Length: 560
Ligand SMILES: Cc1ncc(C[n+]2csc(CCOP(=O)(O)OP(=O)(O)O)c2C)c(N)n1
Image (cartoon, rainbow, N blue to C red; front, side, top):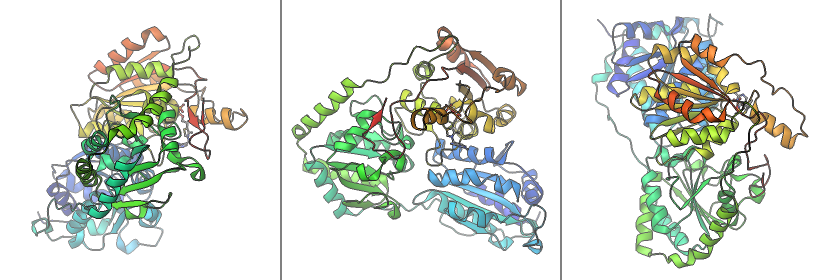
């Protein structure tokens, strides 16, 4: 059979090592689905909503470090991908989104299911390609994968008109290309030396790591640098697991829902070494009050991040793993004097002793404390991967589950997308078939992509869901209570479905509990299920996620 544009898509994905994609067919993408019907080594996972498919691609990428691929038809299929594309852009997730487009002859006629997806997604893609010739398809796929995965990773879109997909194409997969060529950006040696000298001289240093460390595969190098230099370490929500939570140098997560000790250490630091992090507002709080005494070293692969939110004293543009290695080598030569840090560690230990992890409040009759449910999960988690949705449950999970290694924690950080958790878990499970994958969710978020339970059953993706039900949009309720005079509005989710029945309707095993004595057993039973399973836990409806700092307030002023 002669090769068509649509075949070239598949042959190129295969040649580049893509083994799964997530999507839903439709009119304008029919040629590509027909090409799949002729056979491909790329597994296709049929999602039930394109937003689900997009988050699955993200979950796959975040779990594996490999590119995640989602595919959809034109018009509504493509617009349903907008949220995952924005999510992947904010969290720098290497992803490829392939959309069908109306025939070139119908372009601009408001044809059936025509939407300008290139225009709509312009500000949120790393790059996009509107394919104009079938002969270009193979090269376009290779370029797209290359762009998605090099430098700062991100989402790339290929928009493929159906007539081009159906036209004969040159078999360009046989033409030479640089397979696996992924240049790494080396940091400048002089800047590394300055930074190492600043670290060796600092009296109150903090190492602040972000998702870029995970992306660069630099978690071990982060840990080595921290140990060699004796640095206290905090990470963003995105980088949990990049530094082992059991390590005595771990301060916990920083930011709005981070620990007091992490935020106070940043506040009093004389040197902040930021690696693969972007000083976003959920981390810094009000910028005019942020880290007033600190010099800042900022390592980032994306030069546009340096100096974006805070003035940087020593910039290092480069791959986080390489930069961390280089910094460690310099510090080994400098042999820093650890005694100068004794006072700083004393101060940190004092904060720790005064503010240990919160003891859960006694829950009302028929409810479980959220911290209790998460502590039970933490105790049985082992090497499991955890995805979350967005809300209180996400922040409780971030603080209660302790991760020792990267890529175990998958959450929507930058965009804060409710509905992310379940499909992301399915994508992670597709990437790691042998791993246990748990989605920690809230009932508001879970309902946003609950249809993907059907995908879990049909595709044998045995994810476990821990649904923390507080009968409300808890995080919004908490902010209304704390910062909006207690005027609760549009947060009551009293009329939720019967979760056990709902899960069973999809063929998913389910159990519902509200008795604290049942928690440990119920978690164990859920994790032991062969197939997908849901554990619905009624949690205290008034429980707040504390401590926190006020949106727009100073990070040092932690409430609760
Ligand atoms: C798509 C989307 N819509 C709205 C919001 C705003 N928002 C943030 S948290 C939240 C409540 C989440 O409720 P739930 O999933 O039940 O979690 P809980 O906070 O109760 O744990 C809302 C509405 C959001 N983050 N994402």
